[in-house]
Length: 258
Image (cartoon, rainbow, N blue to C red; front, side):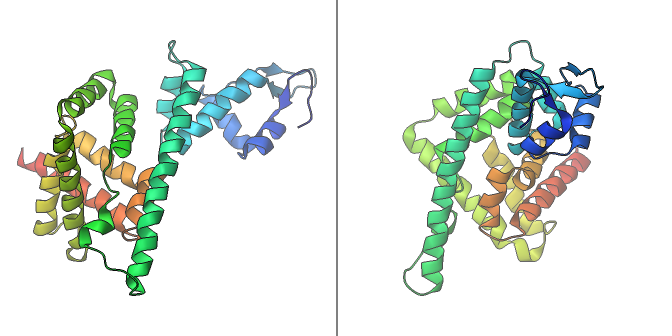
C-alpha cells in the first residue's frame, strides 16, 4: 500500500486492501461509522492506522452477523476496549473452528453411512447441534444484542444446572431440532411443525426468558450468521430458511392469540 504521508492512506488504497468498495467507505462516513482522519492538500481524504483498526473491527463484527447500527453502538461505547474486542474475536473464531471440525466429523460419518461403511443412529446426525461451546456463542450474542441483564440471566441459569442436567438439556435440544427437521416436508406452517416449534420455544427457556422477539431474532440468525447457517445447512440446504420461517410464523401466531 502506497502512503500519501506518514501512516496516511487514500480511500482507494484502503478499499483495495480491505476488500470493500470506495462507495462503502463513503457510506460508512455518512452514517458516522468510519470517518476519514483528514483531507490531504490535494483534496483526497485519508485514513491513518487508528482508522484502519476501526475498519478492521467493523468488518469483523459484520462477519459475526452484527448490523451496522449495532457495530456503531459497540465501537462508540466509551468502555470499548480494542484489545479486549480482539481477544473476543479470537475466541469466537476458535470456537467456530471447533464447531466446524465437529460438523465435518458428522459429515464424514454421514458419507460413510451413505456408502454403507458404517451405521448411524438418527440422533447422531444432529449430535453437534447443541454443546457447551455453542452455548457460549449464544450467550455472547445475547449480551451484544439484548444487553447485560439478559446475558447475566442466561449465565446464571446455565451455571445453576448440574453437569447431568446440562447433558439432558443438550439431548432435548437435539431431539426437538430433529423433530422440526423431520417435519420439513409438511411445511413451516403445518400444525405438527408448529407443535415442535412450541417445544423449541419452551426449550429456549432453559437459557433465558426467550421472548417472541428474541425467538424471531434467533430464526433470522440461523440464516444470516455463518456460524449457525453452516450448522443447519449440513442437515439440508433449505433448513436455515425453514427454521427462520417456522419461528417467525410461530411468533406471529402467538401474538395473534394474545
